[in-house]
Amino acid sequence: MSFLIGLDVGGSTTKAVLVRDGEIMHLVRVSGSEPLVSAAGAVGKLVEESRIELKKVRIIACTGGGAKCLTPSFLGVRSVRVDELEAVGYGGLLLSGYDEAIVSSVGTGTAIVHALKGKKGAISRHLGGTGVGGGTLVGLGRLLLNRSTLGGILKLASGGDPSAVNLTVRDIVGGPVGRIPETATASNFGRIVDGVRPEDVAAGLVRMIGEVVATVSYFAAKMMNLEKKVVFVGSLPEALGDEILRALQMLGGKGIVPKNSAYAAAIGAANMSSQATS
Figure (cartoon, one colour):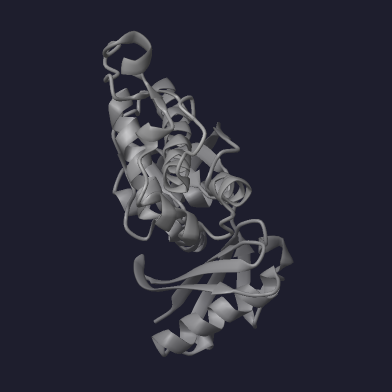
């Protein structure tokens, strides 16, 4: 019996998955001072918590910006590198159950790919994206709200009302426009006045970022006639995911944030390495 490990190696955080016969056995996330440290820690944590011996791991499949730091034999196990966009695309298909979809990877920014299941994984084509993502929320939260963590910004936003800072379609034209309801945003932060509550600013930021990601993803999906099959992956907080799905539905699209979406790239890498070497 052999296992596969998929690693999504970032600058200081690695997301890892243990796979056997295509089935996800265990998931971990480890932070370290540098990519090599977090990757090694993730592998160690996976095998320790799963109670398996490292020698039973056949391949470690690596993707992400930090994957270039790993050698062809990592911790004594053969390692292979998998293109990040292909891993994200295939991971999104596996998590959603679709054979073809638009996969939007929401991280610091947002990357959008068209993923089509093939014989050895996914054929993924980069359609574009936006610099708006989780990093935007953290940066603007720090600048405008003096909150330095994503959790702190989201907690503040939970007590806010985005309509207190945004102008709606009703405010501009007096009613709905086509399929766009009158409650939709016409101008993000177009209602700002002196003394605005920080909670409302935080809620406005979450809505703005959700709407930008949804809109860019929708038009990419529409170009491929896949606006009803949009999969959002990445470390998406529930509040941001809800805003994205709400905005996408308003535009006429349909999307999902599947379970374990944060591990999509690691899951895709592991399963692609299995098919490529079988």
